[in-house]
Length: 395
Image (cartoon, rainbow, N blue to C red; front, side):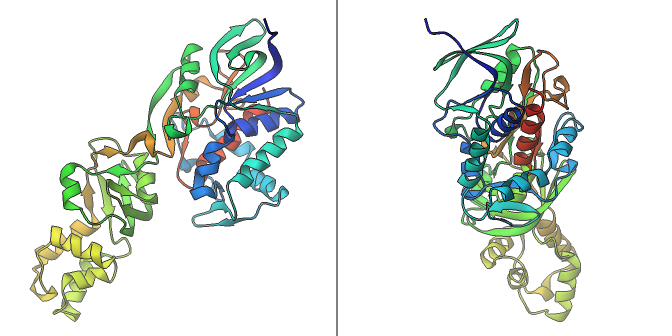
């Protein structure tokens, strides 16, 4: 019978949070084993940002995060900021740029970030084991014992950094939630976040032919609003604006979309009616929307006339259709395409300073497995870096 591997700390999950935790714990002289069932570390990092990794945001604010406990994430984010991660990127001479709204991307490839983290971890003698699946975890008098595909591992502290349910093709699973429940934790109901919204069969027929067309819009739902681009797809609506609002939308509720957010559309149409009475509505709207989109929506929503021939009531109705389109999604595309998982391990049962369980001593939860979800734009990575660093200072 093989003797158990002994180490100070085991981290399950070699993603963004797990790697950062390993680095910080290693800097304190802790003997760290970082394990992952996948064949590569940082898989989600590698595919993020179209392969260029939107690794943080210049404008990190409390309002960019969603959680049952709206104060929980503040401590970690204040102790390891976007500037700390940027300093690490610059230390490794990784070129990067700001894309929009403070979003920072690698100039080259996301693998630059993964390699940076692996290099930092290796410099602290972190042992990284891939292809290592865990079959059982038990608590002992001195810590934990894990049964794994590489044998038994004994450790004093155990960190769960397994991520959420989003993108199961990359190996995402609910294993972290299973561990949490095993050790007495509550799970805040999970659902797909930052995910495209879908059309009903009727809506698919109504909007057939628009796939690939986009517009800069303002979207609102449940008291939240976002001003970004929206994209029509073969299944419904996507694009940054829709992904953002999807984290707040709930089934059966409407998403209100202003297709022309820079215009007071009613006043504009009244003015055009006076100054260009013989021009058609499609042409007027095509000056502000893609022509194919304007044509399709006018055909769908409006009587087709020259501007002079519309009554005031008709102009009001046209303005309402384009400025306050009340869209009722049939659902979302689900975890298959979701960028994150909303919900997770209840933060009320975790220390906001150390990420340690208040239920089971020596057990820690970090990153996406916890009920903290960021907006689109690098905020989920910043939570991963910050929560990983916070735990790494104490495990």
